[in-house]
Length: 377
Ligand SMILES: Cc1ncc(COP(=O)(O)O)c(C=O)c1O
Image (cartoon, rainbow, N blue to C red; front, top):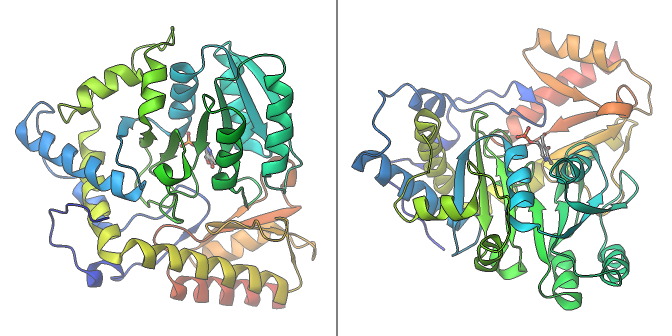
């Protein structure tokens, strides 16, 4: 698929002079040309200029989501779209698979929206497997229809990626009317997600992760059947109502005032992403992940993710050497770099290295050299 571009961005621009500081799983560093795009003067959001920019970005996002349906662009973070998916698409029951902190959040959002929620716990550090989805869905369907399932593609808290293509195939086979809702907040833009071909009904993401944009925008690919379902669900609210968003999208705008400056940065960054090339971008993320996993093992640590399901965007490393993650980060900060501690209960028991967005091989070279110097102390 090809996508329209407007700015004359070249591959040379993509890798220019960027020096990564943040190896945390969001927000990630933003290229200076993308940051600078936010400083352009304000324009009216009902102007031809804004609508042209909106149309261009939405078309590019459809290409990036591998969908021909639609992509809603909202001024929010990813959690807003977790809530939108629940409020628009769940009238009755939803099955939430929980294998980490962010899938747990989606479950909490669903209960917070007062839906009938079936929670399925999967051990953290492991992926949601098709067989587990099959068993849970058969059990849930025995009690009545299921409107949707929620699953997080890439659990940022543990560095585990779940096989959403296979999961969606199971759902389609067992219950064709059940929608497949996918949080791809920390994977989208770093790994290929074939929304249409895999039969995903919602794929949502935030701007501040592998897309390497400032926080504040969120994007959701929404299938035709999901939109049709939304028209039947009561209590969709207003701001995130898919039916309202669709009406505005057809006019290349949003129902409420959009984040114009962030849209400008989005427009520039999408051109940079297509200039790099999608396959090249995904290959870069896979290569950086493999290098990070190898570095961890060679340096006497273990990987937290179960084998075969390690994330291509963030690696969680079990702190088997018992180092002080705080001191490590203090050392790294003197070299203008930062990694992440383990999430929640994993604090100090693990640490996380994000290799997403703008990170290049040379950035990992610098990071690993500094970490090895710290370990040698
Ligand atoms: C997988 C995942 N889902 C959801 C969220 C929440 O996203 P946001 O902070 O953009 O609301 C995060 C944030 O880190 C995440 O990693």
